[in-house]
Length: 347
Image (tube, rainbow, N blue to C red; front, side, top):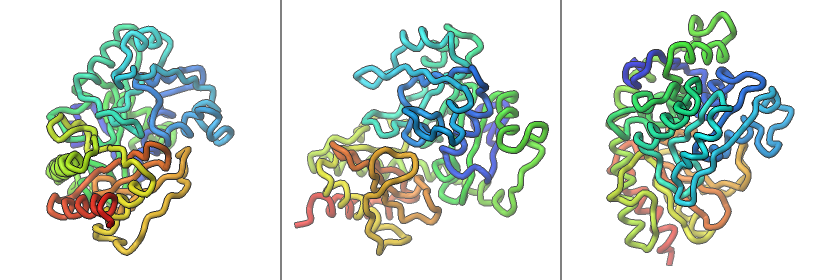
């Protein structure tokens, strides 16, 4: 079912995947071998992948890609946050995997649309016909009519505690794409020779299927919440990305809170309007995989879920806040209102 919906030949959907980062790590280790090169075609990946790859010495000695002799190369985005296609074409011939991150990470840009993903894939493949086009699809599922495998990707990876879990799947992730590549990832998750033949799923399949069934509608609610938040933030003088009138290629809205107090206040407002742990007051703290202290608000039924209304941001200037999710617009609207009030109208 996942493979068909994602426009892929095969899929690996398992509850053993603990997060998006874990799923991405399994896929990358499944595809890459010593001496291979990973090309990040859309700039440096999300903070939590830096420790998986071993960038800047992070995680050295813990089993990073670099510890196993895998090389890393990068095509930074241009100043306008668009891919540098000429640089990608130059670097692709020496790479085994072309990594595309659809969502923004902790950058202030809109998520990449499918036309951009298709152009990056075509550019890399024209320079190296054997390159594997790998898309981190986190936060982007069901925001458009097609998925990256239908736009030239060989493999697409995501998390079930984000869009495709519909707020119901309690854990898990998915890898979908070419059958031979999915098989390699299955060997990495389980063991060589076993692959997809094993998979202890216990009682999770019902929740995973039900969440996947509801996911397109839930993503629609999250996008409605994002549009409402973008309108309100513009009214108080902020410049959200994307704007309410622009295409939404993921469920995330980012904006500069302006001060640490405003960022903390916004997150505490979201937490106070949440159905779970509304009494809690989020505090900035160190988080595994992040370079700065991070504040996170997520009063969610599933720990770490970002399809439920949540927000976070690093405690560094300009104190950018990242708001995402919303299982239903009625409740999420109240959360956005309280967050804006708590950040900018305390007095």
